[in-house]
Length: 127
Image 1: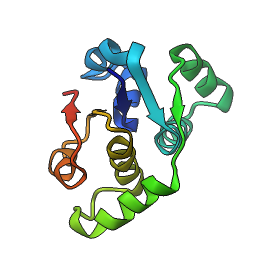
Image 2: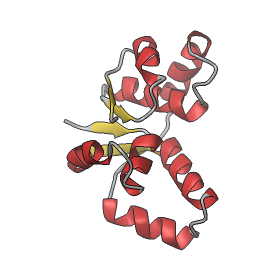
Image 3: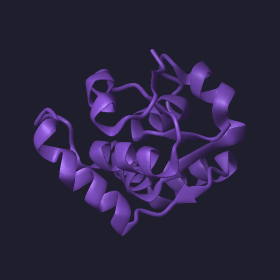
């Protein structure tokens, strides 16, 4: 079954952090939302990687990228008031994408468990 990766899950894999093994188990069926890919790229570059190194790190993973659609924007925006303020836009977008595509999500973000209820999606914590 296809699973949607949050940026935190993809970063855990790339940085070999706790939970990377859980993400690795799902890589053959994983996809990433374009918004979360931007978050991964930005985080890696902010931490000192050049664009070429980021591309070299991501390319072998060959994770298909899911576009962010108008339907997802509506799902996210409609639930914004119900969610903790600490839940960022990329987080909400990922949850909305999971709901729109009927996909489970892998994340390292513990705030997602409560937010999953608002979106009616299955969230698996990687650590």
